[in-house]
Image 1 (cartoon, one colour):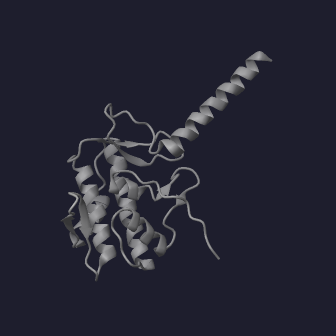
Image 2 (cartoon, rainbow, N blue to C red):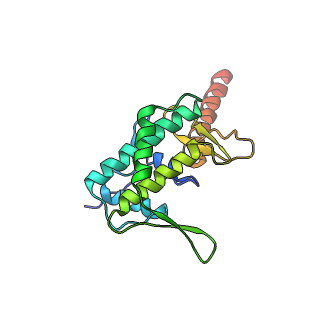
Image 3 (cartoon, rainbow, N blue to C red):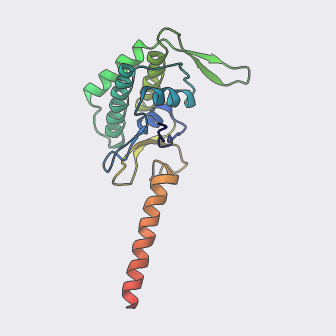
Length: 191
């Protein structure tokens, strides 16, 4: 039996892309890493390739994801970071043993230890979240304007006024709904 999984929403920021593995949080939630194998897929496309993951590691990954989302949401709303979320993020960051490696092309790649590759990869995601939450990057944490999504995303647009976590999904859906509502309104006024 082959299962079709929803596509990943990949952005340029690892931490917020990770939180995007659960979308439509205020509607009908879409879990994009429902299995350990799918976690492996997400880590691989995010530059953190691991060979396998267990159900326990998937549970830990989701714990980190939710802590990052909770902290990013608070930061986007300019509220204090929740202490429990900060603790989870810090714990994951300090447990990872990944090393940044410079590639011959001048890029960065992560070297994960073979014994605890998933933990190392999650440590990289936690460290990335710390970098974003600590304000070390040029950009702004925002929340998607879609009332069913409300995903945290890192806005690096020049004006820092982006409204949607992903223009291809939430942005298009909201613009289409507004267009159809205007058409119905125009049709009603002509009757």
